[in-house]
Image (cartoon, rainbow, N blue to C red; front, side, top):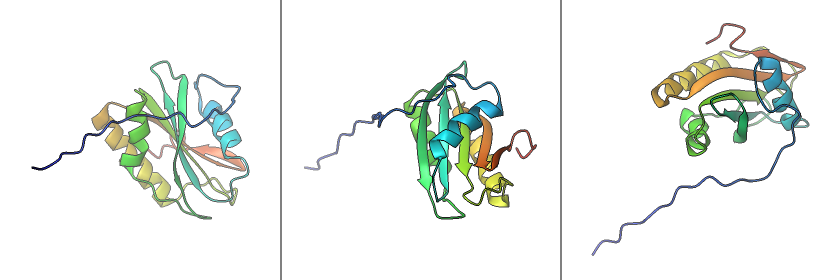
Length: 144
């Protein structure tokens, strides 16, 4: 007789992050949340801000931690917490420890891939914010 494993899928709250902003209505709002969360990080961290239908932040998840100048990211890992938390839209974010917020070709390409995956899942990718000395909004820059 073969024993089939039974799995339970759940989202586990890992703590709280205090932010002054509750609803994201512009890239600056997302930057203010992300920059505080990423403060002091010496390696690239790739994050996803999960939003409800009114763009209220319902959670933040660190998708990947890389090295000084790169971070491996796959759409599957971005959307896993978004699906589990019944997210309507997401904002991607990552830091550039160098301070230079100019997006790399890889930044632009992964954003496009994630946005395409989001369309299939009916989860809108609203923006991708690069945090450094200031920030860059890939949406405002026309990169996706």
